[in-house]
Length: 219
Image (cartoon, rainbow, N blue to C red):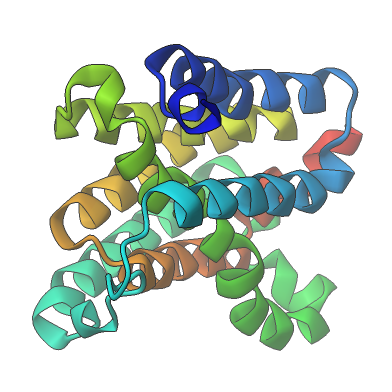
C-alpha cells in the first residue's frame, strides 16, 4: 500500500511541488538561506532513500565513471572554457568591483573551495535534479525526456531564488539545462557532478560567487 502511494502520480506531483517550489519559497520567505546546506542534504537524503528503495536495481551503476573519458570530457571542457570567458567579460562590464575579488578578499579559502564545492554542493544537487528527477518524475509526462530536462532546469533555477538577486536564477536556468542535457545523454552522476563543479568553481573564482552565497542575502 505504501509503495503504491509513493509511486502514484498524485504523490509524485505533490512531492515535486514540495521539493521544487514550496521548500525554496519558504526558505526565501523566512530568510533561511544561511541554512541552505541543511535543506539541500536533507532533500538529498530523502531522495536517496526513495531512489534506493524503488528505483535502484542490483548491479546497476549509479556513478557511471566510465563516462569520464576524453570524448565525453572534451566538449564539456570546451563549453566550460567558453562560458567562463563570457562570464569574465560580463562581470568586467556589469560588476567590475567583483571581478576576481575572491583572490584579494579571501584567497585562503580558494583551495578548500576547489575541492569541497563539487562534493558538498554539486554532488547532492546533481543527484536530486538529474539522477532522481529522471527516474522519479518521468511518469508524470509519459517519459518525455525533453520535458524532464526542462522541468529539471526550471526547478534548479527556481531553487536559486533564495539568494534574492536577479543574477543567480537566470544563470542557474542555463546551467541547469546544460547539466540535465549532459545527464540525459550519459546517465552519469560522476560526469554531471564534475561538470557542475567546473562551473561552480568558475563562478566563485570569477567573482560572481557573491550572488550564489550569503553576500547578496544581506543586502
